[in-house]
Length: 174
Image (cartoon, rainbow, N blue to C red; front, top):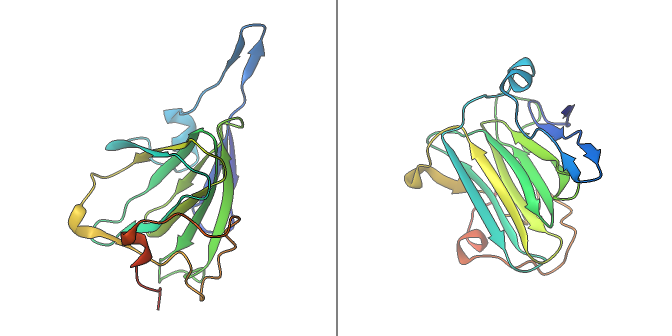
C-alpha cells in the first residue's frame, strides 16, 4: 500500500499495489500494522455504503459536530470527486479544502481525520463509496456546510449537481 499526504494535515490518500497474474489481481485494502505505522486508526466502529445512480450526484459537505469522526472512504464502483474541508479551528488550514478522485479501477481511498467535513460528486453513473468510520453515527450530531459556499470556492467538476433537500439547506461556513 502507498500512503500519500494531501495538503490538509492528516488527510492521506491510500493507494493499492495489486499483484497481477493471468487470473486477475489481488491487493491489500487495509492492514493494521501499515495503518498504525502511518498513525492512522486501526479500528472502525461502522462500515457504510453510499450508492448513487446518476453522475453529478453530490453528497455533503457532512461532518459530526458532537462527536467528530474519522473516515476511510473508498470508491468500490465508478468514479467520484472526493472533497475534504478542514473545520479544525486550531489549525492554520481551517476553511481550506483539498480533493482527490477516487476510482474503483485505481482502488485508491482517502483517510479523513476527525474535524473535517466530507463530500463527493459522482463522475459516472452507478458510483458506490464505502465508508469505514471510527465512531458510531450520532444522528443528533449530524451537521454540514453548503457545497457551494463562496468562501470555500470548491471547483466541483460537473455543473447542476443532484442534491438532497437537506444538503441544499446546509449553512455556510461563516
